[in-house]
Image 1: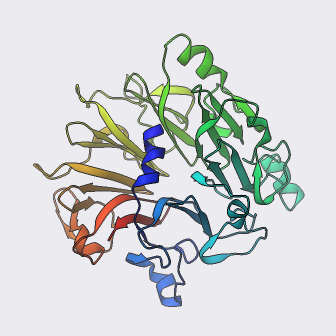
Image 2: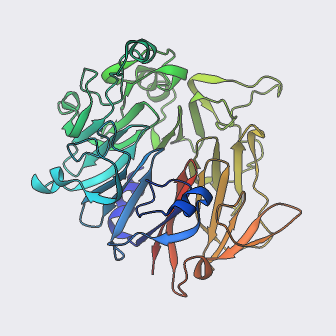
Length: 401
């Protein structure tokens, strides 16, 4: 967990985006392009090899530079961009609050209509949708609970500290789903808040919280009895996946696409939700260890130390199966995923993917795997991918050029 955050401080590159959104890509999109989508990566101007981290949400995006500045763009209808208004922006805009207060942003996480930032002093800041709907019916439906953690349902249009966390050990890591937020502190305690549908908190119930609440199941069972701690946590949509200290993956929340890979031992019944952390099936992993994993709206992908990738989800696979990469490929350096897409990058500059992650490449008709080159895709012979992924129908890559 800590290594993934620390990496952002030292590995920086330029940002490329592409996809079907006319707001979240970071540049103006013409009317014809809006209809067809942007098929190949385009450079987001203004950041010359200084992008450290990128997050894409359903309607907005964010990046952190190598000096800790935060930029956001996309839809701002609930204040999720943090510019003290509800305007939309097609290009990255500096969130001036942090620079004015001499704060460096360490990590950013995006929900459906909210944003979470972790600063270097361990403070957590949130803004955007607070749970208050604009009409009575929607208010009743969503029960006035957002993912901001301020104890009320008000929208916030600029970064606001989650004060309830300040009396605790410093927060080291944050993650967000559609309408919930997770935070892990120095004691490896998990704090959760937001809308609790689908078991997203992993504490055995669907209660919502408008203030941070410690997950007692993690404390009383996983930590105290099983002696497990969280190594890395990732959240998306209405579920979370954690790599625990025993080397296994555990998932909780909605499993509507089979994305958590927790098909039961009998192999007949599929959990629609998991209210408690449930171990991801690993029978096909053999004795190989998990190196990394990524989460998307409807699937997960797992990288093993034998240079193989496994995936589950998309209502096609309900426990991890091997992603059919060609035999004998070079060492895998990065994996990424988003809605119905998986992408793999190797150290020799090859990219392997399915479902038109890019709009170009050579397809193996027997497996559906498409192969391309980093240099070709990013139009630079020296291009090196540092991070790659996406959200819904948009994709991004941080590339050294």
